[in-house]
Image (cartoon, rainbow, N blue to C red; front, side):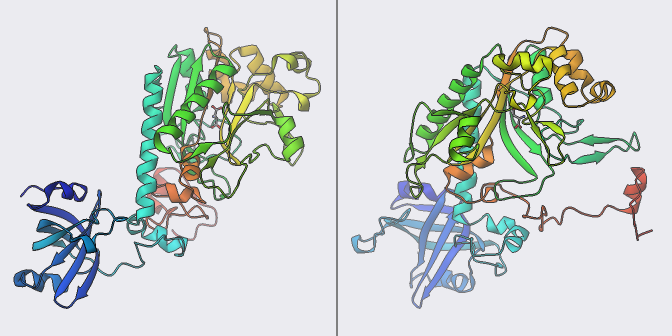
Length: 467
Ligand code: ASP
């Protein structure tokens, strides 16, 4: 008999059907055995009636998390047994036969609870079980909906989705990069992208005009609740646009997304308020102010644009660095100072952040598209001519061949999903995240590579004990 999904059961009242899935719970009441089943579409209660003697022998040994194929008759529940708040609470599957497709050992933790009470290490070691819990299933399915919404919005607005390389040369986004050794050119390395920043700008030079990508970014930094070594962003770039164009395009996208997918939520203020970096620091002592009126309201969304970030900042050691990245253009009013190399710490970039409920959702800027200006930024950052050529020669060169004015943005998918799903941590909305120490206890990574592999790559470990 053709399998039907559990969510469709209500369309088959009075009929015999086959479902496939997992045993969610089992309640033995002597004569009656209740088995709740679940598949990817939901839950339904089944019952083995006393008359079904042949089924009882299977029913007796069956345990939660076993995988089964069940044939049964869909019955309307008597009025007094209806559970309105539950999916399929008004029907019941009268079990006629059960085929066990696979047994399950007792799972190491409760997969029906919220899960927050279980240690992270063990949750991630058995992530495939942890993901069975309804909260995480909801998070992953919602994440998919958010990504699909963005993807469609981009396509409706004539953007083209382009995959940029994972094996690349470093791009400066202010973090340490992960590197991958090259076997063919021993002693050389690729860097994993901290963001597709340079490639998306080069797509603009290529004349694509509107690029986007659901991009994986990798940054080797110390982890916090809203950070992971790898994360996903909706990376996009547009040619011939002003900052205003990007802000209004993005704002409309977020408003539409919230309306479509989270109708229960309210955005505290539209158009989103705008504040300069300077004002934000003065008023809130933060560049990601939380402007919610009621911080206890889980449905309030307070978006705010923070604009006019400084172009440069000082590292703890006192060295100059780009506050965002060195490709941001300089604000018209500050160009003169910039050209003279004066008052650098007060030079502002055409760069902007979108902040939601105190979290930085996204950063972006209008970029430099002229080679000399880009070179000037590198110079001010103390990057020698030789190093400029070695690291960014391709950008300086590309800008000489008719690079259009352009700018972009990159909202973080993990953070958006985390906030909208009311989760305290991005690990709750990522299928297979790393622990707070950057480890994957399930796969056991990072891992030691074999002596042969090291040799093949031309690498030798310091203090290596193996031989
Ligand atoms: N590449 C930047 C980032 O990852 C985003 C941008 O400037 O578009 O933060």
